[in-house]
Image 1 (cartoon, rainbow, N blue to C red):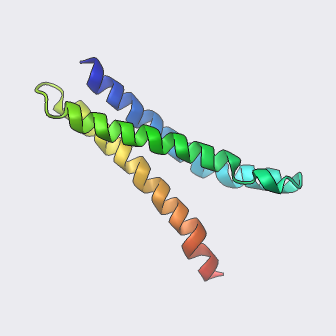
Image 2 (image 1 turned 135 degrees about the vertical axis):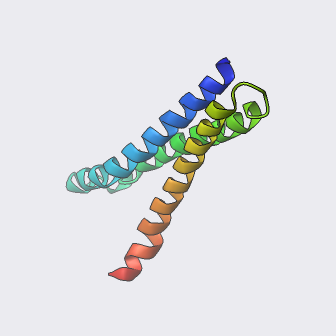
Length: 105
């Protein structure tokens, strides 16, 4: 039963990091620009996105792996869903920020 709980923990942390990075990315960029530190504008967002993507992929993989075993299908499905949600959320945020928004202005 430790495996599905670990998958659920990976999924929860991945979703939390993805959400927090979406909130902190503009703040961190403004702080770096205010200090004329243009080399580190994307340091916090890229680090957070990397952590969220790795944990999301681990949650999806572990969720699918442990979903085949009896007794832990609900927890494994929730873990895979949270991991996939964080991966899709980061993809939508990045595509929206760097592809769609510059064309609107």
